[in-house]
Length: 128
Image (cartoon, rainbow, N blue to C red; front, side, top):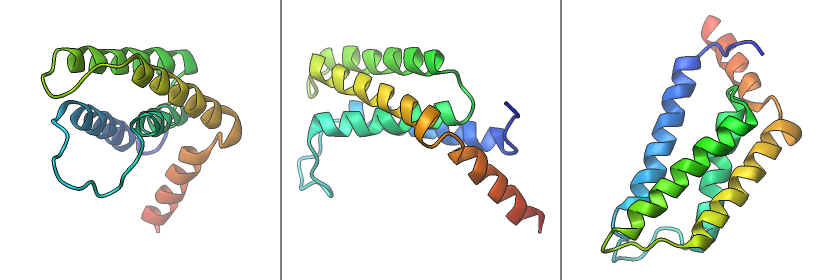
């Protein structure tokens, strides 16, 4: 697989995405009205689906993506266990795993070249 034209940009965006997941998982829940109300397990699924989809698309192997995100999500659950305003839940970890698997499968089989096509499109626009 050829490298993406903007590999550093894609890597930075991936790190920012993981930082967002970490921040939202560790910070105390807001006391006010949420902008979007969503089931907690669905939020876990969606976050890890997109993380897995993203990292698989930018050229990582499925096993690496799966294990890395599993460890990342597990570490967050451990941090939440020791937090006074969050709690660790096995079902959160299960939702993470299902999201990771779905994201990897989608990136590999359903939309296999999304980021490659986007990267090429951006390159063409910038070159003009």
